[in-house]
Image (cartoon, rainbow, N blue to C red; front, side, top):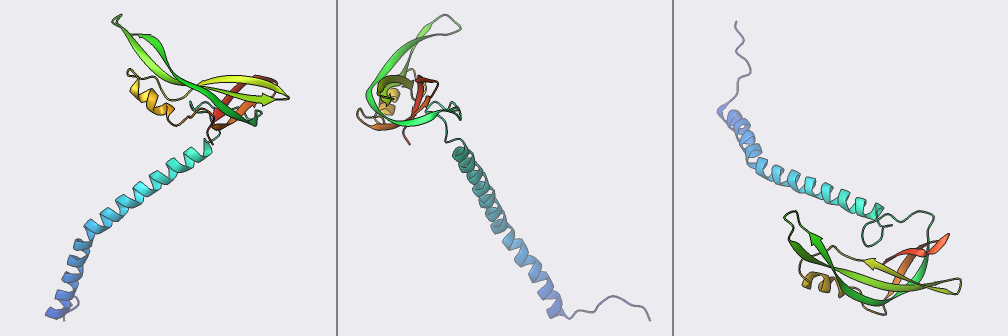
Length: 156
């Protein structure tokens, strides 16, 4: 007697084939789920990275670990103009937002200036950035205890 493999009734064979078809129908949903999962994991890593780098000034420069903090206040804001020389020797005006703030250490008042945002070739963008830095607003000032005139501020 020759063995020809398991014998399946037509109903059993149909069930096996339809199970494969169901899987094929699920493939697009599985792909979408995996895509969303990958996006979520990337987003989570970005959030973790930003959380680890919170101890930075507005321009993204690392604040030395030995610096101390104190409260300060924004006393002025302005859009400053710089001239940028292009390679073809044409001058292009660039504008950046600048914040002036003050803080007190050991009864001595210090004034600091800090650029916020990046230089732009039109004034509207830096002006818009300044709307987030109102005169009179409190800021957290990081300063060097060895030389308190060295400082950076943060809006945190």
